[in-house]
Image 1 (cartoon, rainbow, N blue to C red):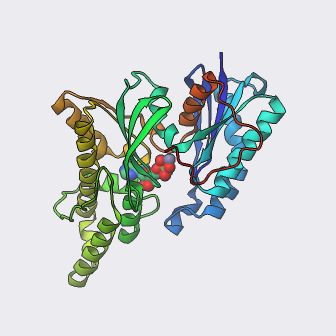
Image 2: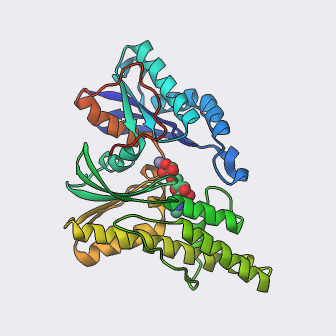
Length: 333
Ligand code: KG4
Ligand code: ZN
C-alpha cells in the first residue's frame, strides 16, 4: 500500500496530486493568469503566486481523493529543472509536510516526470520506447529503456519547441502562452507560407532561426499591407505550426528508425498540440508502429506525473533527506 502526495511547482502552475498504489486519485492544477500581459512567466510573480496557492491546492487534492494528511505515506516534489523561486516553494512545503507527518521525502526530476506521465494510464508503454518531450523549456528525444534508465539522444541547441510557439505568438500579438492559441487558430488556416528548415547535427533541434525568419517575414509583409497579420492570422498560425511539427517529427522518426524502435511517445506541454498528436498517430498507423499520446491533463505541467515518478522511487525506497536543495538546472545525463 502506498499513498503519495505529489507537488509540482517548477514554473507557473501550482499542482498537487494523490497517487494510491500507482493510480491517480486526484490531480489539481492551479494556473497563474498574472503572466498573460508580460508575454512570458515573471519568476518573482510566479513564486509569490505559488506561495498563496499551494495550501488550497493541496487541500483540494486531498479532499477530492478523500484522503487525510495522516493517511499519507510519502511526499514527492519537483526538485528541478525549473525556476528557482518556484521550486523553493514546492520543496519547502514538501519538507515541512514530511517532517510534520514523519513520512519520507521523494525528489523528482521534472523532465523524467513528463515521460513517466505515460504510466498514469493503461496501456503503459512497453520498453524500450522513444519519447519526444516537448515543453516550454525543453525539447528532447529520449530512449527509455526502463523506468529509471533513460538515454538522451538529442535536444534543442537553442529555443525549445514551446518557446517557438510562444515567441511566435508574441510577434503576432497573441497572449502568453501562445501554443494553445496558435493551435486553435491554425485549425481554420491553410499552411501556405513556408519557412526554411534548420540543419542541425544528430538528433538535435534548433528553433531560434525559425523565430527570426518569422519575424522578418512579418516585418516585410507589414510594409506591403499594414493589416497583414489580422487578415492572415489563421494561415500564419497554420504555417508556423506545420513547420514546428515537421521539424519535430522528421528528427523523431529518423531517431526511431535508426534505433529500430517502434514504440513512440510524446510528452510535455507541446504534446497537447492537435497537429502533433494527429500526425504522430498517422505516422504510427502507416508504419504499423505503436504511438502513446497522453491525455491533455498529463501533457502540460501537473503533479500526477510527479506522483507517478515518485511512486516508482517509493517502491525502491529511494528517498531524499531534509538537506536536499532545489536544482534549477538538474540533468539526469
Ligand atoms: O510542459 P509545460 O506545461 O511547461 C513546461 O515545463 O515548460 O509546457 C508549456 C508549453 C508552453 O510553451 C505552451 O505554449 C505549450 O506548452 N503548449 C502548446 C499547446 N499547449 C501548451 N503548444 C502547442 N500547442 C498546444 N496545444
Ligand atoms: Zn513541464
